[in-house]
Length: 231
Image 1 (cartoon, helix red, strand yellow):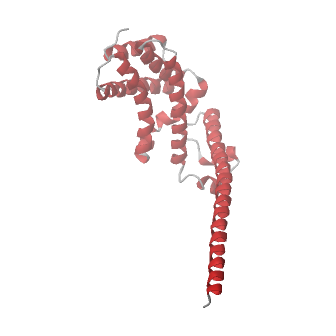
Image 2 (tube, rainbow, N blue to C red):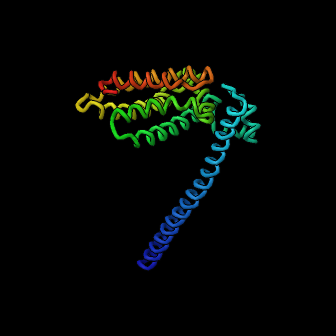
Image 3 (cartoon, rainbow, N blue to C red):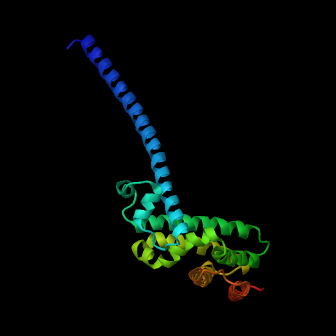
């Protein structure tokens, strides 16, 4: 093979490699663009299902809405539903996570306005109990308190992460309440208050009435005194 022929083949090979790399780059961009577009479409469709489920729960006050009603409200086929969820429980878990995220943000907003550690604990407890007095929050919270054991059994890790977000939020306020307290001790205190507050909320939602001012104040005082603060 002549040196000229060898150089020509080398140039052709380099050109093919460059074109191949260029094609892969453009192909990757096209794929990423398509995936991004489809992702937005999927997110919107999932949100449609979530919003429809909330509406069914609020309208019917049904603690375990039927999938048929949800799909009818969302104007979606069962095939469309199972494209995203393996079961209705998985949808309820998504709603639970959405509700917990909203609650965490709501509580944080209340706690940020407090000027003392005692005030932050009070803001957290009163904020949890306030879920029973807000009609929109009550209708969205009730089904998950009723079905939390079922969801915890089906999705233990996801359920625990949801609980941890609220407990950690309160534990941070308890650490401020008594500087020097060990973080693990503060977290155990927060877990105890969490169970007390959500237990009271559960009863209130079940009876369809918000906790009385006296009930709320008693729980606040019990929580602050129990963690070593002063009311």
